[in-house]
Length: 78
Image 1 (cartoon, rainbow, N blue to C red):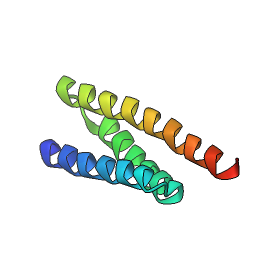
Image 2 (cartoon, one colour; image 1 turned 90 degrees about the vertical axis):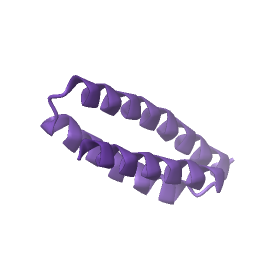
Image 3 (cartoon, rainbow, N blue to C red; image 1 turned 180 degrees about the horizontal axis):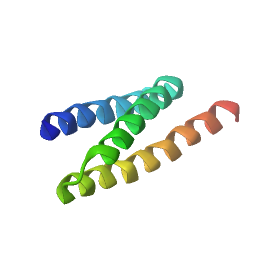
């Protein structure tokens, strides 16, 4: 079950990356919030160390993507 959940999250993270490449910060940010909430939920209900490490990796990646999205917003106003 968790493996399927991480595959879904992986696909959604790829969508965020695609939105960033398209310079669509609004859709990227909306999807990022959605994935972040899903990761928080997994974190709350998981007690498996591997799952917790996987959630942590995705959280770090989402933080980096958030910085990229913020950079896109800065470019739009320049």
